[in-house]
Length: 214
Image 1 (cartoon, rainbow, N blue to C red):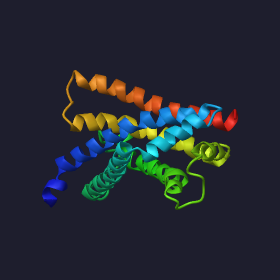
Image 2: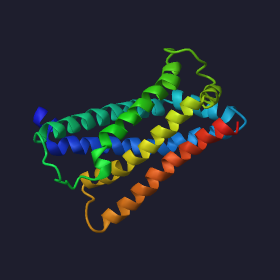
Image 3: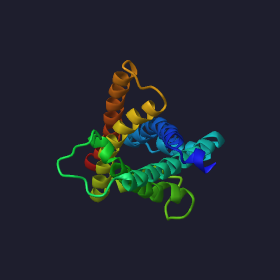
């Protein structure tokens, strides 16, 4: 069983599936967050309440958290294996074909994980009653957070790094799943660029608008 779970192919395949599942969630999360730009708090609070109570959403939430943990576990595992596999003391001047994005995936991923911890602390843990706050009025909670300059700086930086992470993650995931040929590669690269720019930009618009104009 261990050989199957930790083989070179299987761990990348599982990580790719978990990553793609997370990618599908981001546009939904962004669409709900755009409701924060409304002056009326009711739509956002209703959406947040629906996401927190609808049984199917709760099942998806469990799958989402599981996907996050699996993605992080395999990402760290692969990176540690890669570090251990490197010979000691590369000669100066030797260049590898590893892309810029690939080299820094572990660090961009770590920044995204840091943001998730902050995000879970401020919202998910509040819903569970582990931290103080009103879980029925996440609209006010979000607006208060976005009035804090430091929170916005961290938020924007993490989403810039998320964009870098997404570009390489999408390309790698589809290649791992077998879509790696002369026809699909350009299509996937274009989609990866558009997605990696559009998602962070959308979240940035929400952050900057609430910070500077509300």
